[in-house]
Image (cartoon, rainbow, N blue to C red; front, top):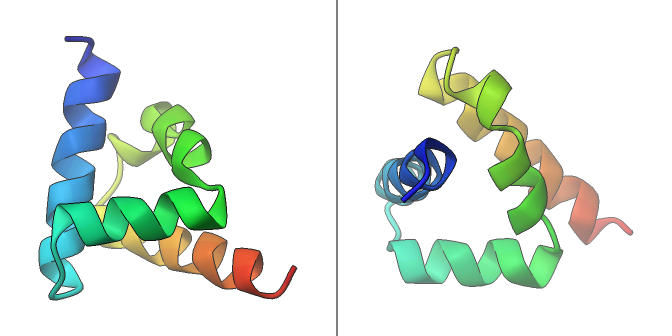
Length: 68
């Protein structure tokens, strides 16, 4: 498994926990919003900062997807 995939899974699980949800529910929301690949591809930025910053960015991506 690549380091990017390992981090993506970690981020998914931690985000779900922080949002009082489960990984499968969160992944479904990300997929429906069309942002899963974007989040995965943000590895270089997300893995070097506080997870809360990544969470906030993901929340903004979700909000932006809702307003399209």
